[in-house]
Structures are given as C-alpha cells and as structure tokens.
Image (cartoon, rainbow, N blue to C red; front, side, top):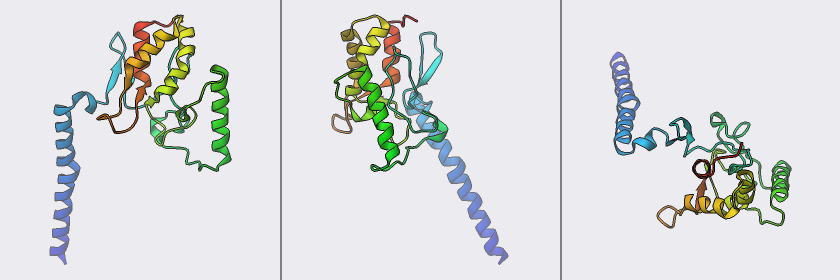
Length: 192
C-alpha cells in the first residue's frame, strides 16, 4: 500500500508541476513573444499615456458626447467580477420590462428610428466591448450635438472605426465603443 501511495503522490506532484507551472509559463511566454499587446490585455491609453480601458472588455459610458455601450447584466453594469448574462428567458416579464424601458429611452433620443436589438439587450458576458454599426449610427446625432459638430463628422469617425466580420465571413460588422470614443476625443475634444 505504501508503494501505491508513493507512486500516486509522485504522479500528483509531477502533473501539478507540468500542468500548474510548466504549461502556464510556456503559454504565457509564447503569448508575450507572439502577441505582446493582446497578452497584456489590449490596454488603450489617452493622449498623455494614461490607461483608459481595454479594447476587449466593455465599460459603461453615459455622457452625451460619448458612444454608449450596449446594456450590461454583469453585476451593477460592466462589473468584470460578475461577468454573465441576466438569464432571463424570452417569456420572463423582467426581460420584457427592461427591453421596453431601454427602447423608450432610445425613442426619446431618436424618435421614429429603428432600434437595433443590441441597443436594448445585454450580451452573454455582460462585458461586450462592441456594438452594431446600426446602434452606433443611432447615437451620432446626440454625440454631434454634445460636441458641437455636424452629425456627418461623427459618422465619419464611426465609419473609420467599424470593423468588418473576421476573415470577411465570421460574425458581423462591429464598432468598438472605446476605440470610437478615444477617436472622438482626439478629433473633436468634448466641450465640457
């Protein structure tokens, strides 16, 4: 029995070192060499070099001069420690109430506009950094008014930052909210 216990303990130590130390260090080292920016979290900075967020993790924007993110069900909104969806089913009245309230707010901002689904629904993680081009276009007039520029100028920034589907076929066109907001600040500094 002691020989079996010694063998089992030896295997546990060997596999702990292999899968808990050697493998993570190897993957981290390869990632740092091949993709250093992504391995460090795709952190974006402002003009002074101060970190303002990650291009991979969404954050809440509520000021009128900024592109707003899609709703988040992560904690109290964009809480990375509580990533996840709301788990409301399609027939859950709480989901219908939340969607109706978000749609009513958007109708005040853009009367008569067609409201894209990502403008009123949360993503599965609750931390989606991207929105649809349709939702970004819906916000262009509000942003232009807040920044004192023409809506076409804001739309040109949105168009420049719109990303095509991956490899031209995977997913849909998308707009990274943080990238657009950083570009807007660079081109049209906020009047506040």
